Length: 377
Image 1 (cartoon, helix red, strand yellow):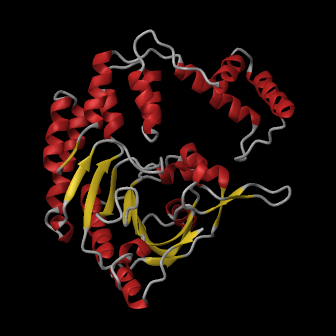
Image 2 (cartoon, one colour):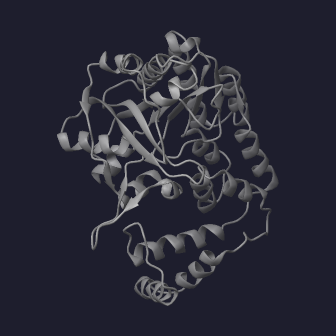
């Protein structure tokens, strides 16, 4: 396992300083997190990057892959309506190439009455200044919005099942590309899960769960993730139903490709997005907010950073629903950001199990080891 670089204390303290200046409460959530909760909130695509543990007869847990969900749970448990929480500690990501334990320094902010655009700009600036304190001189910003793709898909007048399918695929580019290549009348290629799902879909829920358990027993499979047979059967059935939805027309597929291809300086990128669907009120409102957000970012130190806006959804974590951003290093490349963050207004409500937890929720972190690597400091 690759661990984060050992940092000179002076450099690490420089990275901490912008977070200390916020007056945030420093917290240290548990390293072990419930696996089923992490997967439900962050998305199944993250499963392959988790370190999973299970004591005899106990619930499966994982080493925390990030701080956002654990800190959000601490905030909800406090009963406070608002709060800023800073943290410093290791997170753990599995990978076939380079499993890592990564030092993160970051902040999560909960403010029900905050102006979201102003709060977004403030967070981008805070994370930029902390990353810059790491000593690199080759940093740039990559901006985006997890809510833009669903808003654009809504403008296409698609079958609801197909629209939902596309939005769920947004974090899995290869699957989304395959869907865009599927033409009218073509059925998606069936894999073994699809075949099983169709058979399960023809049965009442109780019989479907029993059949799935029988298949597991015959195959010697032990399910992971803490989900029951009924839950897994339900997911497979919904997947099969979605796969049978009508395909995109060539014009609709081309429109989505044009959306996903936008990657350029923020102002021109927003102009191109606006031209894709000029009469779409909801999409245009999000773009108007982005122009105001850029006004505010340009007025703070982060505004001096080289920046691009990327329309294609990004990120390992499916709970982001608004602003997403990364601080990139020219030497490290786009796959190894120095810092990252975003908005997740819907996450507290999902954690609380009710609509009571509403408001502005966002956070970001710096990876100090990456921030100073190759600087010789």
